[in-house]
Image 1 (tube, helix red, strand yellow):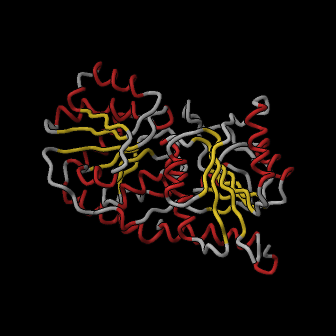
Image 2 (cartoon, one colour):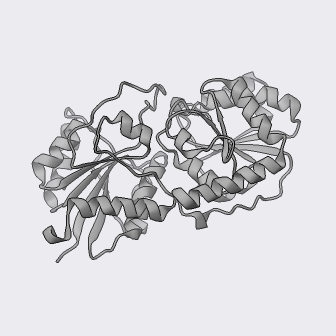
Image 3 (spheres, helix red, strand yellow):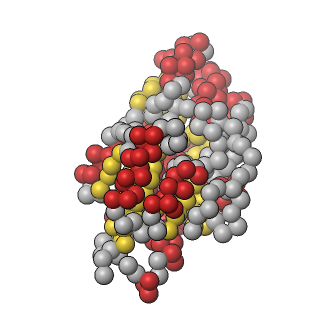
Length: 356
Protein backbone atom coordinates (compact mmCIF):
# COMPACT_ATOMS: atom_id res chain seq x y z
CA UNK A 1 0.00 0.00 0.00
CA UNK A 2 1.39 3.43 -0.91
CA UNK A 3 1.42 6.38 1.47
CA UNK A 4 -1.58 8.70 1.29
CA UNK A 5 -0.59 12.07 -0.23
CA UNK A 6 -1.45 15.24 1.66
CA UNK A 7 -1.14 18.67 0.00
CA UNK A 8 -0.93 21.65 2.34
CA UNK A 9 -1.95 24.89 0.59
CA UNK A 10 -0.67 28.09 2.20
CA UNK A 11 -0.70 31.77 1.28
CA UNK A 12 2.66 33.47 1.28
CA UNK A 13 6.05 31.79 1.44
CA UNK A 14 7.46 35.05 2.75
CA UNK A 15 9.02 34.92 6.23
CA UNK A 16 5.75 36.37 7.58
CA UNK A 17 4.15 32.97 6.96
CA UNK A 18 6.63 31.11 9.17
CA UNK A 19 4.16 30.19 11.93
CA UNK A 20 1.87 28.21 9.61
CA UNK A 21 4.78 26.69 7.70
CA UNK A 22 6.26 25.51 10.99
CA UNK A 23 3.04 23.65 11.82
CA UNK A 24 3.35 21.81 8.51
CA UNK A 25 7.07 21.20 9.01
CA UNK A 26 6.48 19.69 12.45
CA UNK A 27 3.67 17.56 11.08
CA UNK A 28 5.85 16.23 8.26
CA UNK A 29 8.50 15.25 10.81
CA UNK A 30 5.93 13.44 12.97
CA UNK A 31 3.95 11.38 10.44
CA UNK A 32 4.76 7.80 9.58
CA UNK A 33 6.20 8.21 6.04
CA UNK A 34 4.77 4.86 5.03
CA UNK A 35 1.32 6.19 5.89
CA UNK A 36 1.33 9.87 4.86
CA UNK A 37 3.43 11.90 2.45
CA UNK A 38 3.31 15.65 3.10
CA UNK A 39 3.68 18.14 0.25
CA UNK A 40 3.26 21.93 0.31
CA UNK A 41 2.05 24.52 -2.16
CA UNK A 42 2.27 28.29 -1.65
CA UNK A 43 0.23 30.84 -3.56
CA UNK A 44 3.00 33.46 -3.34
CA UNK A 45 6.77 32.98 -3.54
CA UNK A 46 9.30 33.42 -0.76
CA UNK A 47 12.17 31.86 1.21
CA UNK A 48 9.99 29.35 3.06
CA UNK A 49 9.87 27.20 -0.08
CA UNK A 50 13.62 26.59 0.01
CA UNK A 51 13.51 26.14 3.78
CA UNK A 52 10.95 23.35 3.50
CA UNK A 53 12.80 21.74 0.63
CA UNK A 54 15.91 21.62 2.81
CA UNK A 55 13.90 19.56 5.30
CA UNK A 56 12.98 17.13 2.49
CA UNK A 57 9.41 18.42 2.13
CA UNK A 58 8.34 18.74 -1.49
CA UNK A 59 7.33 22.37 -1.93
CA UNK A 60 6.19 24.54 -4.83
CA UNK A 61 4.59 27.89 -5.69
CA UNK A 62 1.75 28.54 -8.15
CA UNK A 63 2.12 32.36 -8.15
CA UNK A 64 -1.58 32.99 -7.70
CA UNK A 65 -3.62 35.74 -6.07
CA UNK A 66 -6.32 33.20 -5.25
CA UNK A 67 -8.81 35.03 -7.45
CA UNK A 68 -10.62 33.74 -10.53
CA UNK A 69 -9.54 36.74 -12.63
CA UNK A 70 -5.94 35.65 -12.20
CA UNK A 71 -6.25 33.08 -14.98
CA UNK A 72 -2.58 32.05 -15.04
CA UNK A 73 -2.52 31.40 -11.31
CA UNK A 74 -5.80 29.52 -11.44
CA UNK A 75 -4.46 27.36 -14.25
CA UNK A 76 -1.23 26.65 -12.35
CA UNK A 77 -3.12 25.55 -9.25
CA UNK A 78 -5.50 23.38 -11.28
CA UNK A 79 -2.52 21.78 -13.06
CA UNK A 80 -0.92 20.95 -9.71
CA UNK A 81 -4.13 19.30 -8.50
CA UNK A 82 -4.38 17.23 -11.68
CA UNK A 83 -0.71 16.26 -11.65
CA UNK A 84 -0.92 14.03 -8.58
CA UNK A 85 -3.39 11.77 -6.85
CA UNK A 86 -3.83 13.66 -3.62
CA UNK A 87 -5.85 12.00 -0.88
CA UNK A 88 -6.16 15.06 1.38
CA UNK A 89 -6.06 18.77 0.49
CA UNK A 90 -5.28 20.70 3.66
CA UNK A 91 -6.19 24.38 3.09
CA UNK A 92 -4.63 27.02 5.32
CA UNK A 93 -5.82 29.86 3.08
CA UNK A 94 -8.36 30.74 0.42
CA UNK A 95 -12.11 30.61 0.12
CA UNK A 96 -14.69 29.05 -2.14
CA UNK A 97 -12.55 29.08 -5.27
CA UNK A 98 -9.71 27.02 -3.79
CA UNK A 99 -12.25 24.76 -2.17
CA UNK A 100 -14.16 24.34 -5.43
CA UNK A 101 -11.08 23.63 -7.53
CA UNK A 102 -9.92 21.06 -5.01
CA UNK A 103 -13.31 19.32 -5.28
CA UNK A 104 -13.44 19.60 -9.05
CA UNK A 105 -10.00 18.29 -9.92
CA UNK A 106 -9.45 15.71 -7.17
CA UNK A 107 -11.30 13.11 -5.14
CA UNK A 108 -9.40 14.23 -2.05
CA UNK A 109 -10.85 14.90 1.37
CA UNK A 110 -10.77 18.62 2.17
CA UNK A 111 -9.41 19.85 5.51
CA UNK A 112 -9.91 23.55 6.27
CA UNK A 113 -7.48 24.99 8.86
CA UNK A 114 -8.63 28.36 10.26
CA UNK A 115 -5.91 30.39 11.98
CA UNK A 116 -7.69 33.60 12.94
CA UNK A 117 -10.72 35.87 12.77
CA UNK A 118 -9.43 39.42 12.36
CA UNK A 119 -8.32 41.34 9.29
CA UNK A 120 -4.55 41.60 8.95
CA UNK A 121 -4.88 45.07 7.45
CA UNK A 122 -7.43 46.66 9.79
CA UNK A 123 -7.36 44.51 12.92
CA UNK A 124 -11.15 44.37 12.83
CA UNK A 125 -13.01 41.13 13.49
CA UNK A 126 -15.83 40.56 11.05
CA UNK A 127 -19.15 38.85 11.53
CA UNK A 128 -19.12 35.19 12.42
CA UNK A 129 -19.27 33.31 9.17
CA UNK A 130 -19.35 29.88 7.72
CA UNK A 131 -16.53 28.59 5.55
CA UNK A 132 -16.88 26.58 2.34
CA UNK A 133 -17.91 22.99 2.91
CA UNK A 134 -15.04 20.75 3.98
CA UNK A 135 -14.67 17.22 5.31
CA UNK A 136 -13.04 18.54 8.48
CA UNK A 137 -12.46 22.02 9.91
CA UNK A 138 -9.57 22.59 12.29
CA UNK A 139 -9.59 25.78 14.39
CA UNK A 140 -6.53 26.96 16.30
CA UNK A 141 -8.61 28.00 19.33
CA UNK A 142 -12.13 27.75 20.69
CA UNK A 143 -12.87 31.36 19.78
CA UNK A 144 -11.86 30.67 16.17
CA UNK A 145 -14.04 27.56 16.11
CA UNK A 146 -16.97 29.67 17.27
CA UNK A 147 -16.20 32.26 14.57
CA UNK A 148 -16.23 29.56 11.91
CA UNK A 149 -19.84 28.57 12.67
CA UNK A 150 -19.06 24.87 12.27
CA UNK A 151 -20.46 22.71 15.04
CA UNK A 152 -18.11 19.92 13.97
CA UNK A 153 -15.01 22.13 14.18
CA UNK A 154 -12.05 20.47 15.86
CA UNK A 155 -9.93 22.70 18.11
CA UNK A 156 -6.23 21.90 17.76
CA UNK A 157 -4.00 24.47 19.41
CA UNK A 158 -0.63 25.07 17.75
CA UNK A 159 2.28 23.53 19.58
CA UNK A 160 5.98 24.25 19.98
CA UNK A 161 9.02 22.10 20.67
CA UNK A 162 9.92 22.99 24.24
CA UNK A 163 13.45 21.66 23.79
CA UNK A 164 14.23 24.53 21.40
CA UNK A 165 13.71 27.18 24.10
CA UNK A 166 15.81 27.80 27.18
CA UNK A 167 14.10 29.10 30.33
CA UNK A 168 17.37 30.65 31.48
CA UNK A 169 17.69 34.43 31.22
CA UNK A 170 20.95 35.85 29.86
CA UNK A 171 22.54 38.54 31.99
CA UNK A 172 21.79 41.95 30.51
CA UNK A 173 21.70 45.55 31.55
CA UNK A 174 18.40 47.20 32.39
CA UNK A 175 14.88 45.93 31.94
CA UNK A 176 13.95 44.66 28.48
CA UNK A 177 10.45 44.30 27.05
CA UNK A 178 10.23 42.17 23.92
CA UNK A 179 7.71 41.35 21.24
CA UNK A 180 7.80 39.36 17.99
CA UNK A 181 5.23 39.65 15.23
CA UNK A 182 4.35 40.93 11.81
CA UNK A 183 4.25 44.71 11.92
CA UNK A 184 0.67 44.99 10.67
CA UNK A 185 -2.37 46.82 12.11
CA UNK A 186 -3.87 43.72 13.74
CA UNK A 187 -0.85 43.38 16.04
CA UNK A 188 -1.42 46.70 17.84
CA UNK A 189 2.28 47.53 18.27
CA UNK A 190 1.38 51.23 18.21
CA UNK A 191 -0.36 50.69 21.57
CA UNK A 192 2.80 49.18 23.02
CA UNK A 193 4.94 52.06 21.78
CA UNK A 194 2.39 54.56 23.11
CA UNK A 195 2.61 52.92 26.55
CA UNK A 196 6.38 53.30 26.70
CA UNK A 197 6.91 57.00 27.62
CA UNK A 198 5.16 56.64 30.99
CA UNK A 199 7.14 53.50 31.75
CA UNK A 200 10.42 55.04 30.58
CA UNK A 201 9.96 57.94 33.02
CA UNK A 202 9.79 55.48 35.92
CA UNK A 203 12.28 52.89 34.66
CA UNK A 204 15.30 54.78 33.40
CA UNK A 205 16.96 51.56 32.21
CA UNK A 206 13.95 50.34 30.21
CA UNK A 207 14.31 49.15 26.60
CA UNK A 208 11.89 47.70 24.04
CA UNK A 209 12.98 45.23 21.35
CA UNK A 210 10.65 44.50 18.43
CA UNK A 211 11.40 41.42 16.31
CA UNK A 212 9.57 41.30 13.01
CA UNK A 213 8.80 43.42 9.98
CA UNK A 214 5.85 44.55 7.92
CA UNK A 215 4.04 47.41 6.26
CA UNK A 216 3.92 49.54 9.43
CA UNK A 217 7.61 49.51 10.30
CA UNK A 218 8.36 53.02 9.00
CA UNK A 219 5.25 54.44 10.70
CA UNK A 220 6.15 52.78 14.00
CA UNK A 221 9.72 54.07 13.82
CA UNK A 222 8.30 57.56 13.22
CA UNK A 223 5.97 57.14 16.19
CA UNK A 224 9.00 56.41 18.38
CA UNK A 225 10.69 59.60 17.15
CA UNK A 226 7.55 61.65 17.70
CA UNK A 227 7.33 60.38 21.29
CA UNK A 228 11.03 60.99 21.91
CA UNK A 229 11.75 57.35 22.77
CA UNK A 230 13.67 56.26 19.66
CA UNK A 231 16.75 55.59 21.81
CA UNK A 232 14.71 53.13 23.93
CA UNK A 233 13.36 51.05 21.02
CA UNK A 234 15.24 48.66 18.76
CA UNK A 235 13.66 47.21 15.63
CA UNK A 236 15.36 43.85 15.12
CA UNK A 237 13.69 42.77 11.88
CA UNK A 238 12.97 39.11 11.27
CA UNK A 239 15.22 36.92 13.40
CA UNK A 240 15.87 33.24 12.77
CA UNK A 241 17.45 33.02 16.23
CA UNK A 242 14.36 34.26 18.07
CA UNK A 243 14.79 31.62 20.80
CA UNK A 244 18.19 33.13 21.61
CA UNK A 245 16.89 36.69 21.39
CA UNK A 246 14.17 35.87 23.92
CA UNK A 247 16.73 34.89 26.57
CA UNK A 248 17.60 38.60 26.82
CA UNK A 249 14.01 39.69 27.47
CA UNK A 250 12.25 40.08 30.83
CA UNK A 251 8.64 40.37 29.64
CA UNK A 252 6.91 39.46 26.38
CA UNK A 253 4.10 41.79 25.28
CA UNK A 254 1.46 41.07 22.61
CA UNK A 255 -1.04 43.98 22.39
CA UNK A 256 -3.07 42.69 19.43
CA UNK A 257 -6.52 43.74 18.27
CA UNK A 258 -7.28 40.05 17.79
CA UNK A 259 -5.44 36.72 17.76
CA UNK A 260 -6.27 33.18 16.79
CA UNK A 261 -3.52 31.49 18.79
CA UNK A 262 -0.18 33.22 18.16
CA UNK A 263 2.85 30.95 17.95
CA UNK A 264 5.26 33.76 18.93
CA UNK A 265 3.55 34.09 22.31
CA UNK A 266 3.73 30.29 22.75
CA UNK A 267 7.45 30.47 21.99
CA UNK A 268 7.87 33.18 24.61
CA UNK A 269 6.06 31.03 27.17
CA UNK A 270 8.28 28.07 26.26
CA UNK A 271 11.25 30.37 26.86
CA UNK A 272 9.98 31.01 30.39
CA UNK A 273 8.76 34.56 29.82
CA UNK A 274 5.71 36.04 31.54
CA UNK A 275 3.21 37.40 29.02
CA UNK A 276 1.34 40.70 28.94
CA UNK A 277 -1.40 40.35 26.32
CA UNK A 278 -4.58 41.96 25.12
CA UNK A 279 -7.61 40.15 26.51
CA UNK A 280 -8.79 39.10 23.04
CA UNK A 281 -9.32 35.96 21.00
CA UNK A 282 -7.20 32.92 21.63
CA UNK A 283 -4.90 34.85 23.96
CA UNK A 284 -7.51 34.35 26.67
CA UNK A 285 -7.15 30.58 26.16
CA UNK A 286 -3.36 30.73 26.14
CA UNK A 287 -2.58 33.09 29.02
CA UNK A 288 -3.92 32.33 32.51
CA UNK A 289 -4.38 35.81 33.93
CA UNK A 290 -2.40 36.21 37.15
CA UNK A 291 -0.62 32.86 36.75
CA UNK A 292 1.30 32.76 33.45
CA UNK A 293 0.94 36.43 32.64
CA UNK A 294 -1.40 39.39 32.73
CA UNK A 295 -4.26 40.37 30.42
CA UNK A 296 -4.83 44.01 29.50
CA UNK A 297 -7.70 45.87 27.90
CA UNK A 298 -7.24 45.91 24.14
CA UNK A 299 -6.41 49.32 22.66
CA UNK A 300 -5.72 50.91 26.04
CA UNK A 301 -2.03 51.94 26.35
CA UNK A 302 -2.51 53.11 29.95
CA UNK A 303 -3.87 49.72 31.04
CA UNK A 304 -1.14 47.97 29.08
CA UNK A 305 1.47 50.09 30.86
CA UNK A 306 0.00 49.18 34.25
CA UNK A 307 0.29 45.44 33.52
CA UNK A 308 3.83 45.79 32.22
CA UNK A 309 4.79 47.92 35.24
CA UNK A 310 3.46 45.25 37.61
CA UNK A 311 5.94 42.77 36.19
CA UNK A 312 8.85 45.16 35.82
CA UNK A 313 8.52 46.03 39.51
CA UNK A 314 8.66 42.44 40.75
CA UNK A 315 11.41 40.10 39.53
CA UNK A 316 10.09 37.25 41.68
CA UNK A 317 6.65 37.51 40.09
CA UNK A 318 8.24 37.52 36.65
CA UNK A 319 10.17 34.38 37.50
CA UNK A 320 7.19 32.47 38.93
CA UNK A 321 4.94 33.44 36.02
CA UNK A 322 7.64 32.49 33.53
CA UNK A 323 8.03 29.06 35.13
CA UNK A 324 4.26 28.56 35.08
CA UNK A 325 4.08 29.71 31.44
CA UNK A 326 6.68 27.16 30.35
CA UNK A 327 4.92 24.40 32.27
CA UNK A 328 1.62 25.31 30.62
CA UNK A 329 3.22 24.82 27.20
CA UNK A 330 4.56 21.43 28.29
CA UNK A 331 1.18 20.35 29.63
CA UNK A 332 -1.12 21.68 26.92
CA UNK A 333 0.67 23.07 23.86
CA UNK A 334 3.46 20.70 22.91
CA UNK A 335 4.27 20.00 19.29
CA UNK A 336 3.62 16.30 19.94
CA UNK A 337 0.07 16.97 21.11
CA UNK A 338 -0.60 19.13 18.05
CA UNK A 339 0.73 16.68 15.49
CA UNK A 340 -0.98 13.67 17.06
CA UNK A 341 -4.34 15.44 16.89
CA UNK A 342 -3.89 16.45 13.23
CA UNK A 343 -2.86 12.91 12.30
CA UNK A 344 -5.97 11.65 14.10
CA UNK A 345 -8.08 13.88 11.83
CA UNK A 346 -6.38 12.35 8.78
CA UNK A 347 -6.91 8.84 10.13
CA UNK A 348 -10.61 9.55 10.63
CA UNK A 349 -10.99 10.83 7.07
CA UNK A 350 -9.01 7.96 5.57
CA UNK A 351 -9.51 4.93 7.80
CA UNK A 352 -7.07 2.06 7.37
CA UNK A 353 -9.76 -0.11 5.84
CA UNK A 354 -10.12 2.41 3.05
CA UNK A 355 -6.43 2.97 2.53
CA UNK A 356 -5.45 3.80 -1.03
